[in-house]
Image 1 (cartoon, one colour):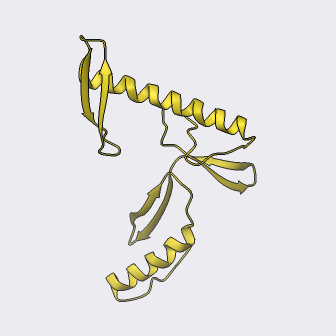
Image 2 (spheres, rainbow, N blue to C red; image 1 turned 135 degrees about the vertical axis):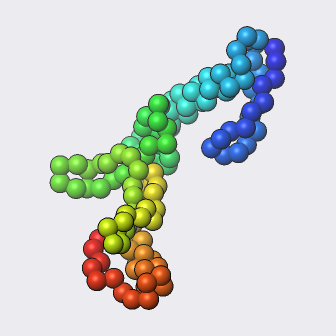
Amino acid sequence: MRLVRSLDPGTGEIIDVLANNLELGASTINSIYRERWRIEEFFRQQQEMYDERKHTIDSRIISISQPHVRSIKRNKAGAKWEFGAKVSVGIVNGLTAIHRIGWDNFNESLDLQGQIREYHCTHESWPENRKA
């Protein structure tokens, strides 16, 4: 047995794993551990939803290969749910600037107000067009 210590790139926490494989490198063992954790967490979430008769759970893993992807309830015609990152952008003089990107749901109209104020401070005038 050996102790494999590494830094989790997502949280910055130190992860200690006991491994009985002496041939694999530390990064390989950590990758295997992370994949196993995803599967265990996915199963735990599914079990909790089943036991408590719920249809959703906070920070639900919907893709084992991409656990950061979240479903966003939209209630749009033809698509009640969207998957992937949500982006808030602004276009000034043909240049696009990303103001916010996130995997969880957020209200773009609240971002728009801040973007308009930021534009006014930068350009000392109000934008000609404002669209949400």
